[in-house]
Length: 115
Image (cartoon, rainbow, N blue to C red):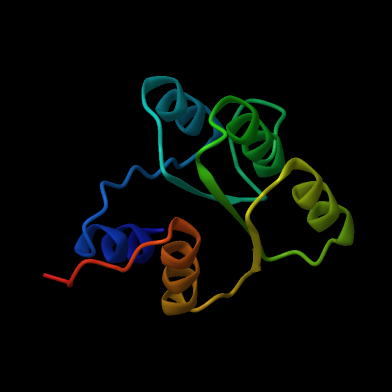
């Protein structure tokens, strides 16, 4: 998570990283995002997973680009993500450069020059 947030910050993005589902929900209640990268497996007290969070984002923030990440091979998860309109489904481990290129393509922008 640190490498990803550092990379996107270096390329001009404001980044919030949620360590668990509760923190993610709090962030989403406070602001809108152009991009959400959501892991299928999220920790926290709530009985929820990343797909539930992605579904909420797609419903409440339809302009937000959503990328789902998972280390688990699950056709059911991929099907569910596609049905809710997730923009991409990425299997971990994924190279950071690949994820960043995908995000920039989905956003229709080029990365800012790294500082």
